[in-house]
Image (tube, rainbow, N blue to C red; front, side, top):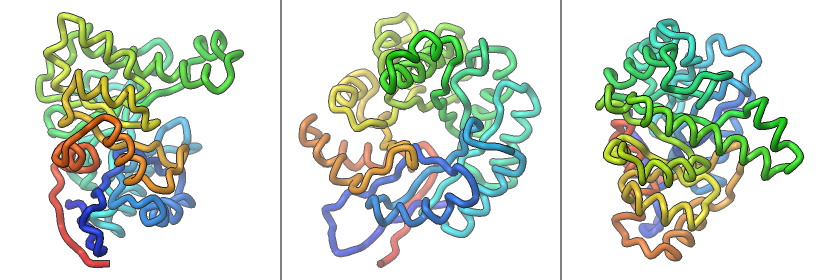
Length: 287
């Protein structure tokens, strides 16, 4: 499986691989493909959040089918309910070995369970053995929503941020990353608070197994993420279609200018880090 290098006469435009994109249902596939050109994105890495799905049956086959129709422009991650033990691990193995998917989408929590729960260990162990990344996605939490709901949109984001941060902390404090040194996990920029806390913890060394995306295109979070993890562990992520950027390369360049990144770091964050993490190579086509 390979990513796409787009030749369009503009050799200065960043090659963007959007790690944080979602397939909501079969009807959204056309919009997803159209969005590549609209947003200036060379490729998207797609996953299907379980909270968006009415019926998760067959979702990984649908993702693989879309990848097959658009090789290089779409990369797929298997979506599993990681808190169901061996059944989820078996679906991940099928998704990677039979369907050609390149990672696994996992909710940051399920009820009181976090990724350090025994129920989640088979999926995480399978990802480590397969050599594919785990995308830890934020989810709402009923208790936190009840407490923060009066804060409106920011309260909703705070809820998801707290859960995403807790997932990261659980992997570190629960010894999961130490037990599975081959495991690589990706959190969203909403987990930046958890990343800051982890950076001062005894488990800091295990952060080399952690990647973070650029959801929200926040310059402060970008600076902090690079300071803690390094530019080689930051990925472009937009949260499409929840957020629909019209000029992703432009937004990235403006942020990179503000942070003061060199050309190598810009290319890495825009797309090269994602390709390396996925085990994808570049191909060139002319449009």
